[in-house]
Structure formats: C-alpha cells, structure tokens
Length: 241
Image 1 (cartoon, rainbow, N blue to C red):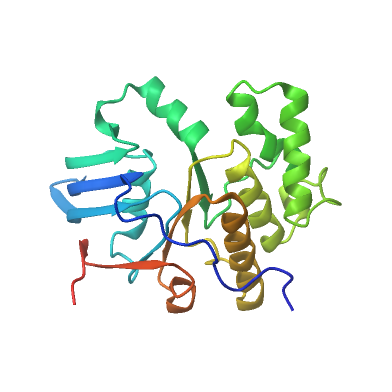
Image 2 (image 1 turned 45 degrees about the vertical axis):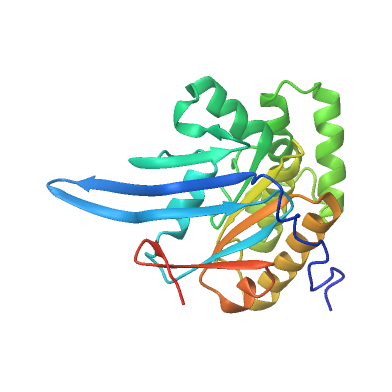
C-alpha cells in the first residue's frame, strides 16, 4: 500500500484570480521537408495558480507540444503564451532560460538524468545553475531525495536505480528551485502500473504540500481523474462536448 494520499486536497484557485498560464489562439506547425504538420490548432486556455490540470488525449493529439509551449521549451508559430502575464515570445533567450530554471519544473517520461552524475548531483544541478550557494543546493537536494524516499540512494548514478527511482530523482530535481509550476509529460509512461500509481501518489502529495501549479500530459483516464480539471485534446485542438 502506498504511503502517499490518493486524492488531491488543495482547492482550486478563486475564479477572479489572474491566470498563471494563458494561451491565446496558439498554433504550432512543424516543417518536414515540403510537408507541414500542424500539431496545435488554435489552443486557447488558462491555468490558475494552484490548479491541477490534466491534458488528456491520444498519442499525436498535441499534448507534449502544448506542454513544451507552456514551459517555454518551444514557441508557437502564431498566437501567444503568457506566464504570469509575460508573453513568452517577447522574452529574450536569457530571460526565458531564467524563467524555465527558476519558476518551472519539468518531469519527463524518459527522466533525462545525466548518467555521469549521482542522484544528489542531478537534483542539485538546477539550483547550482540558478547560482544558489553550493552547500545550500546540496542540502536542499538531499532533503528532497529523502522526501521522495531515496535517502539511501544519494550517491547512486541513474544506471544503479530502477525506473521508479529515476523518476523520483526527476521529481526532486523539478522541485529543487521551488517553482511556481511543474509540468509532467507522461510521468508514468515508462513504469509498470504499480510503480506508476506510487509515482502519481507522490506527485499529488508533493503538489498538495507545496501548493504548486501542476499540469500533466497523459493518455490515461485513471491518471487524468486525479486532476481538478481535465482538458481533452483531439487532433491538435481542444475537444468540446
């Protein structure tokens, strides 16, 4: 039995609160030779601070692409993405990098841990990049790894960890700079059902503790049911009833 709660307890933000995230008529097109692939088709949506939103849809629906735009990993071809009322397309590369490092945490399906670094080093790296005092970065990373159940794995490298343990490292890394927003792209996709359930319990528990805004991309109805709000994507557009 998981030691983490199975439900989210934080209430949605007040309706009159300005959104933390907002997209306005966002389109994303990729060019492949002479072919153009329109992945997102006019996405307009908003996410309040403290919200927990699931982006649900089949593979190819545009979930990951939208998640990348929300986190400033990519920019739209047209339309606008706002983070805390800042238009991401108008930020300099330096400012965009700083925003991603300090205000957004990313959890990917493939973990994206650096193989040559220990769990402690992987988690503390974003804090070091943000110029946190090295001792403070290591201490905070150690505390987070203990919180996600890896207090005995601080010096282990990724190849010495199971898939579930690697994802726990990735979750700790996403939280190291105390971000306003955590974006998770199919965080249980590479895990068996039991481990995946534990990881989702952990993510929800940490979200409740820190009142962080959480947006998860998933094709799983079970995972989406954990969210406060579900946005269905179909063929690059928001599906309406």
